[in-house]
Image (cartoon, rainbow, N blue to C red; front, side):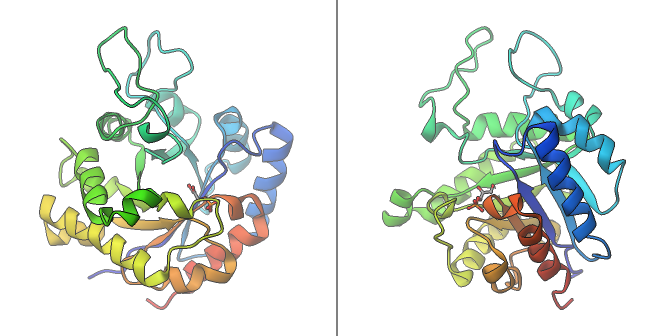
Amino acid sequence: MLKRTPLIAGNWKMNKGTAAEATALIGEVLSKSEGISGAEIVVCPPSTVLYTLKGILGGSERVALGAQDVYWKSAGAYTGQLSPEMLADAGVSYVLIGHSERRGRFGVAEPDFTEGILKHFGETDASVNRKAVAALAANLKPVICVGETLSEREEGTTDGVIQAQVEGALDGISTTQMTHIVFAYEPVWAIGTGKTCSSDEADRVCGVIRAALSDLYDAETAGTVRILYGGSMKPDNASELLVQPNIDGGLIGGASLKAGDFIAIAKAAASLPS
Ligand code: 13P
């Protein structure tokens, strides 16, 4: 099987969203990443600074731009939402979809997709699927986030939760389109808590995702999809996570706000044995 190119994505969340902050951080990311090859680097800043960063990156081959969310409509009365086409115009090539901080378990329990009754700010597998389909149609690459809560892990339902999230996200997505999809396994209990999933367990669950893809598509397709780990990834634990056979990169929150830490992780990914 061909080696999958590692992907290191920084999710800035609701941080560094002023022009001055974002300009300073991206400048450091660009200078510290000079000379890195063998790993793709993506930053996902708040939407307020996408155009600013597009101007600074100028189509950089080293650092790509991602968004933190997308809506599935192209235009209309959807206050506060951003369409895939708008994000593409702002220089975005990747988009996070279904991050646990947006999923329904923290928002609306019973979303309703009826036109005019917009109660779906709590993300569900169905809204993740709509967003992924719309993103692909605009040539954006979805980074679909999946992960179990602490109580789901304690109840022993982790694998079933993950399989359902993977399957629910991919309704109607073709084998050819799968080459543009990235998954991120982010155990909710490991996000921003300093608790990392052990590298063996992270690899095992990423393997569960790959097996689900193999069942839904075929082994060859499953073998080409990149699966990232996210949750308290730092320079000192990155290598042992990234070296795992089913882990193809990282989705990094806190450590992506420090250019030195973020690029140390990217260097660890770039120096993996092929
Ligand atoms: P932390 O790296 O801060 O745990 O965040 C992970 C995450 O949620 C990335 O999307």
